[in-house]
Length: 352
Ligand SMILES: *Cc1c(COP(=O)(O)O)cnc(C)c1O
Image (cartoon, rainbow, N blue to C red; front, side):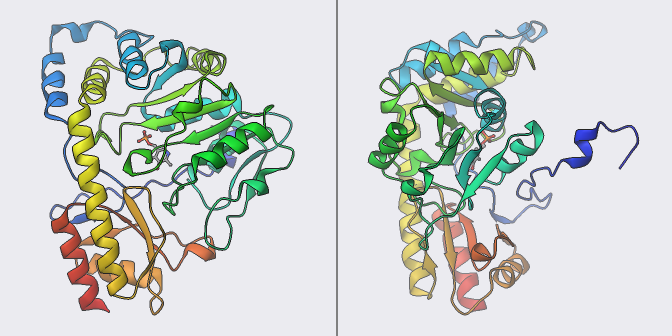
């Protein structure tokens, strides 16, 4: 608290990211990073960018990156917006498209950054409870709203929502923007990108942090009708002209273009996930169905906080959410390598 702070600062409740411990030799399964490095072509592109040209500003419009994304998703560059991580893209989305007189709707259990943006921008919102089995029931969104946002698959549950349901939601809310945050879509969930040309109220956001293994580079993007994209550009150009630096642009373009490496590593993560789920079930865990690079699992005989502590004593870090109460028995476990799964299963066998 300080007399120097603006009023709004006193009222903020900032987002708390997963821990980035400074220790080595940890099995780090807490922030959904990719266990494999980025494509070797990304590293080459970054090295080439370490040059005298760094004295110059990057392209404020990121035209080359937008063109690469548009090409990959069969869109027009006017349907693409890019930013410094999808968190920044989402911040602009909240300010540009989701602040209206009617409340914004999102699930009660979801990405915990959403209520933080609402606090920052003074956006009125209502949370919509997930069903008993932690899924989204689109009928619960049939109420007056100034927008709808949810991740698909949802976080931290990992549960995907079928494309047909998303289409129904778009049809029943033609006056609202529906934002589908597809941070984890490449790990086996169907993308809504193919609906963009049909639905001017659909905005899909992606990140290079998870499936493209570039959490350290900070690049995210949104795809939607040129009308929605223009709103984002207006906010961005009132905030930071150069969110994508020269490295981020070069690395992101190389990552988007290396489809082969991307598909291979996503497939590996999915294989490791399916094997880990089998092993956890054998240990008595209940695991929610996941379309992501993480799983949400609980053991009927153990509290989530206790298991998290015991794993930590064995140098394994997973994520635990104390609230809401419904999720407190669960651990959110990022999918690592097969070797990391083995270490986790060994530690859990010992603990149980
Ligand atoms: C990780 C994540 C993001 C943000 O990713 P960036 O690293 O900021 O690109 C956005 N939404 C969800 C649901 C996420 O889990």
